[in-house]
Length: 240
Image (cartoon, rainbow, N blue to C red; front, side):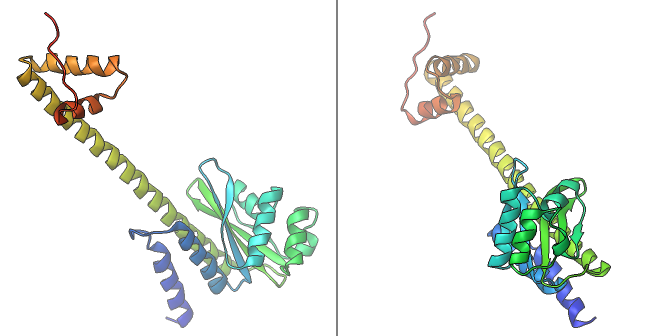
């Protein structure tokens, strides 16, 4: 294994590590931008990621010049990343000096920053596209096929990491909601038992009493049950 091969392996291992408690997606994508520049031999890299509305946002750039170029895409709604995100495939232009008709504002900004060619890669997982990676070079010419394949693999690996992290967050939310529901049910059962004993009611009647009070006072049943258990609320036996 060559030193280059070892470095590629190390980077993929690095990008796959999204299970840590302090995972920071911005730091993760900053790292991706730096690693793309390092491994793919390009001058700079920028990363756009879609929010929950499907709108692309700049989340990382390997240099300030690259950041300004990426912002130009977003501000003018034109550029290779927007195209790659829309179609889900790589978009390449080997000489930006001939791209003015295609992306006039983006091209002017990129050329002004000294970039002469561009390759945009979608961040995709199956049919879902989360964003795009923009590779900027100060020389003209297309990236060779192996480099494009490696770049797409890096983008895809990062995408899997992001999807996995989002799934974990959603699972944590679902688990928390389930636990809250279970805790609420336990509290209500305790309050039912307390009222049933203290007011000499059936358990069903005790529950009906709490529910009627909650509805009459526009309160959550769980909060009423908690107040009953804590002695903050005294309910009386309903008239026969």
